[in-house]
Amino acid sequence: MSVSSNEALQLLQEGNKRFSAGEFATKDLGQTRRDELIIKGQNPFAIIITCSDSRVPPELIFDSGLGDLFVIRTAGNVLDPVGMGSAEYAVEHLGTPLLVVLGHDKCGAVQATMDGGEAPGSVAAIVAKIAPSAEKARAAGITGDNLYEECCLENIKATVAEVMGSEIIQHFVEDGKLAVIGAKYYMSSGEVEFF
Image 1 (cartoon, rainbow, N blue to C red):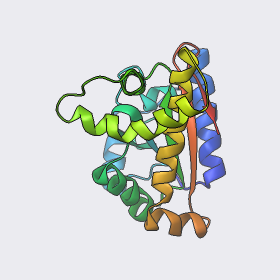
Image 2 (cartoon, rainbow, N blue to C red):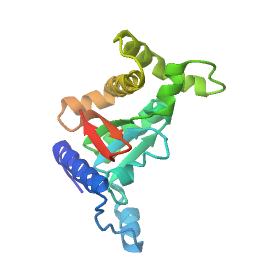
Image 3 (tube, one colour):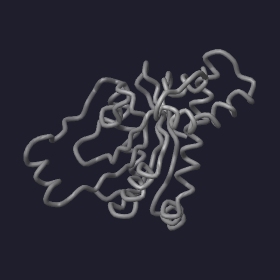
Image 4 (tube, helix red, strand yellow):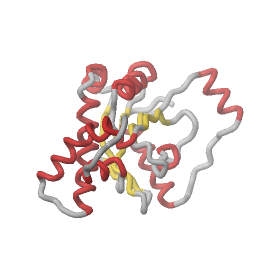
């Protein structure tokens, strides 16, 4: 499937509308489709950088089929060099026209960062990536549960900015071959807000 970034965004929006309404499209998940993807290769229309949270499955949230999405998942939708390399691969080698950084409400990684305390083992690396977003949220003077959600938004923006720091990503954006946007998933409604 070869589409523009605007068409890719529309596909995500339509899929999310179906998901949130509980009206799923019929998808070919059978042997023929699997064989086609092996023979012809993958051609995903969107890269989704999102949280590892088991309640946030992009393929379901966007009612997508096999080969539609190139998904990169880490707790708190933060990036490391491996995640960035994965995104660059999808852009450069697969020609994927849209990259979405998808955060979500009630994010445990964001909440743990905001609440502070000891982060054992490699969890500290996740907290360190989210900490600047937590500081921005606190500086905004927001309190209560809204503080967590503000941190979530700041964290999405920070990951978008980090993605845009890639020379490969920048090159494709400047050439009009790629769009990079942020989005937030709301678990209760099932809806995604794009921004």
